[in-house]
Image 1 (cartoon, rainbow, N blue to C red):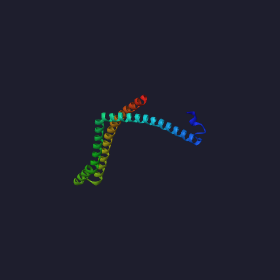
Image 2: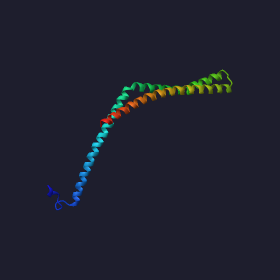
Image 3: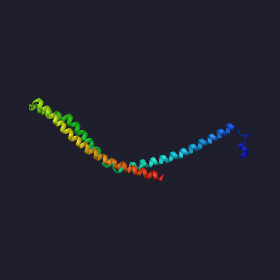
Image 4: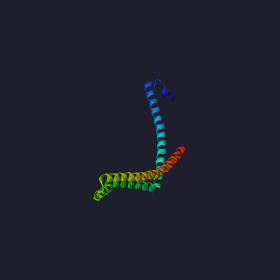
Length: 147
């Protein structure tokens, strides 16, 4: 076997090509193993994350529905209710300066109320998301410990 690799039978350039080929294959093999390991970790994390989402699916839907209702209520107030109140004030022949003051107070009060509702909703949603993310992080940590 040693005779095959003597200087007389194989040129230096061929030896270098063979070395380069072996090094590339070794590096690719190591990189492929590392990549497979990382992909397994990512797959396990995503699988566990999806199972957590399934577990909290109803809570996620509920929070989404509440946020959608709040957005609709806000839009309806500014597109319909405010116009109706303004028209009613005009029909009642309320002085324009007083009507403007009442409308401003109504908008301020209603906006404040919606903002409080939105804050409570966001706080509840964020608490739920925080719990979900913590569970996901715990799962990720346990998967990485196994690898």
